[in-house]
Image (cartoon, rainbow, N blue to C red; front, side, top):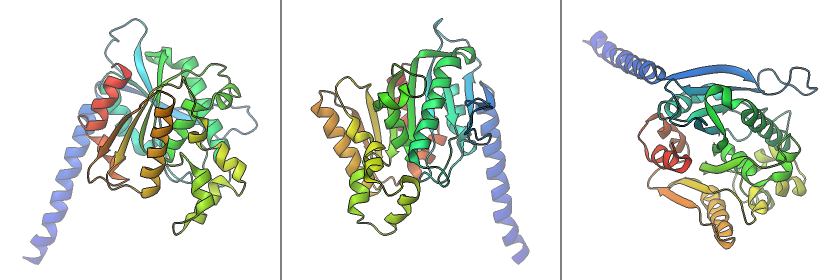
Length: 294
């Protein structure tokens, strides 16, 4: 009996694994994946072959318009010190299945680099996307950015910091909208000055100790009239720092005459806000598809 009881959980796990793999196979069939595409030239002095790469997920079906499918560039989170695009294949697959070309990127992590270098990597990935996405079925005139957690803060910088983009080959901001999923880092200047939560000093590793850099890397201070539209999704049980900075970001956008779409998901914590993207028909995809015109 003891042996049988031990075998039941193992059998259940095997069934779950088979179901998950079968689901991924079904989802993968309508899409193509171009893996580990370099977005920084191999002869660049700072090139990192493992981090300066991205994956492109394209629908196999023909685009309904000659210009191509809308494009979403996704930036992962991980407190600016961890994370990898390979964890988020499910996002690329599900977007492609629903008529979106997805670009899921890596970027360098801290240490040894800091957030300004990470933001530069994201800008370089965006420039690559605009230049090359047509060959993957995407429309370079309909490029949107999306990020979760730290990736949300980096995505917000791409949507607001024209100087950052101009420094990396984009004299005109090509971002048509930003989807922020429980974003962190929108106002690290205030956050790091206050240091009111335990273990806050860990964020000095990616941001350094210069308050001028904290402000430079905080998208909230770059809000101005004429920005692309934003859409926010926040967990109802997320961290107070995320809900607080997102609310202030929303209010500053409203003051410029642009009210963002702003949805709070009741009962949802920070990590589940990205895990829910495993399911194709969840609330975020529903809003995203309308937002990008898919």
